[in-house]
Length: 524
Image (cartoon, rainbow, N blue to C red; front, side, top):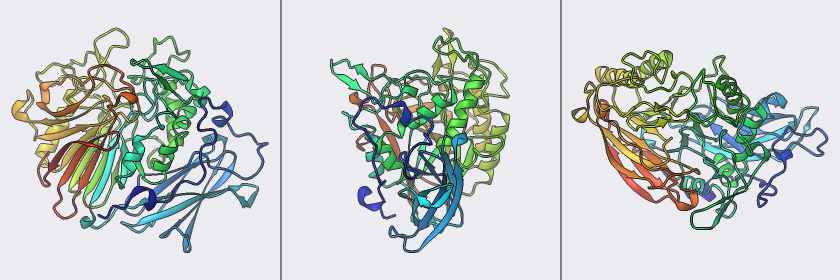
């Protein structure tokens, strides 16, 4: 695959964030557009593409007022020969956001697109087009694939800092010219207010751009929407979105920390105590602000398969919506687990049917790292592993069932990618080291955060025999992005040999660790 320099290869968003140097932005920027606004519709939040395949993709935009979404595509930046797609009418019911599905695209080609917003009452009146580009997945194995993954954005009070340059990690990611970016969850921190300044341990001050919606925990639909809009105030992210398609999943902070269905909050910051109510509002905002292929289905599910040609299938999990309640996680039977019975059945079926060389399981939480949930003062467990090194218990039972299935169905090329724990590491799982042995070896790679607090390495649970081959993490908790420890991962699949190379990278793109995997092995 030919990788050209990032800034000159793709179209750059036209326009820029007004008042981006200001530390406090007016509420009007993130609230419902005023009908008294003069002129033509504008798309100040940029464009995004998502769930791109060999012949299709989704294009997203937000208008500042009611508008008809129109997308034009072309093989060239000049748009001399273009194809037009008529999208939805953008209105208050979707917070003036909209997504248009493009079908029948050529595989393995660079697609240039521009989004026009037309006045609903006068289609001849359109705003300035906003441009972007993406590459469709190739149907030819020899072309190879490169993609990135990470997670955790604007967490622990570390928001967009103009002194720091904003979310600069996106510039390093874009420079690698990936085919897509997999975001492993915690796209926002709806439970994490952002203040104008934070004192750092060295006596300096971290400054944040702030908005009204980020001044408190999100409870209303408007506040959840405002959390998603907050990140789109960063020019680095908007530029990246216009140049690299995404595959998005969610985790807890899209709603509130460590949530599970049916939970009633004891957090005094919330007037709405029902997590189910909060999750419903968060899901609506999530579906409005990301181009995701399944969210318009009646069940609105997040889990899905995104196929990327003969080399790669990505199985996007949802370990949040269908889980049982957080507990000590030591029960000896657990049919629901962390995936739910229906999602587990779906995953088994999709893995069995997959003919891709590599099968990436995009997991929003790690398997063998102990992630506690002590929010109510109890020693509950938030992820899968509970620290007992013996036979599977609790949610581990469901993962054991899946690993056994992969082994006995002789499913090859599975690799687990995740984020969540705010450090980067590589774990190799081996039955000879494990209490549960009925599985084939496999790798799990952890990355993140993108722009959030960094935390020490999590403890390992030996049930599935993980060995931490590499880790980089701070010794202190909640280290700011100014202190480093911001990470993303890269995956390269060679079109000729089929080898898969994982690189764990720092914020500036420096490679910390490399692992090469060979194709055709059961598990991996």
